[in-house]
Image (cartoon, rainbow, N blue to C red; front, side, top):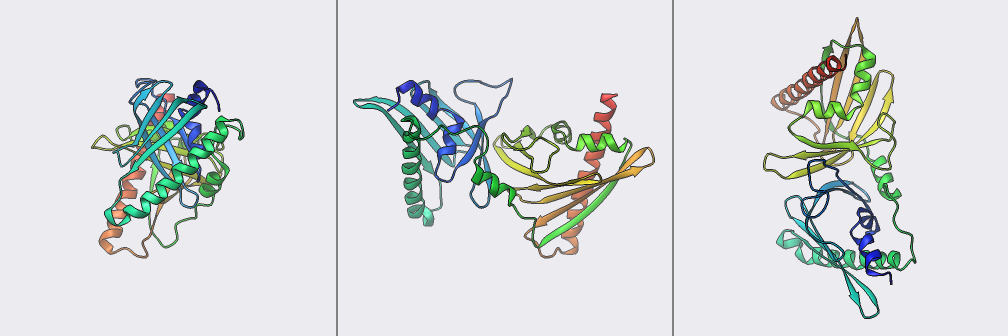
Length: 302
């Protein structure tokens, strides 16, 4: 068995989560103004072998070299990973809780027990040197699940367009930037960036993560995929909830640029007139936010 310091280096790392039975990607969220050690640190969590889902993990307690406690934002799931010296080497321990409805309790307990047992066995094999340590980046099964995320099936569609007083090339470049995301939602988005191990921003297959701070202070996470790209447009598909798809089309309009947004919301076969009106107004408001933010960023860059 690995010495305690080597075992702790594994258990306390984001890469340890890639050893879970169904695999996942976990990485630290860098915040220059936040803690770099101990409680309060945040990690992004992306998992799912069929339909990916995202969550934010918060470090709630840490005893360096011994124990790390984390929970999802809101506390519906918790984990405690610990390292203890033993008579025959080093003991690794994982404890976890899930908050579920009463009818699902028995099945959830059995599933959680199996998951922790398999995860602990995988970590033990890695610590003992029988398996390689998980690499940085996204496990292949998770990558394929994200790339296979289908376009919305039956979906409600709404469209809006605006004219932006900025040349086409500048609009095209800004639409692929994290800077624009933050400019559109300065109060709501706490973190945004490229998912580690995916193609660079602006390349098909590239994935972007978003961390949103809700009004109640809790964090939610989501991931989008650049599903298609052409000289005149791009398709952004959310591979985690809410799973909608946004198509951007742009073309020159004199010295300006005409931008058209089309949003497809899955799960709706039809909208009432009132629902469609609200949907259209929402997309129109989004198009206006893009216009205002792009013009503001372009002006600041001159």
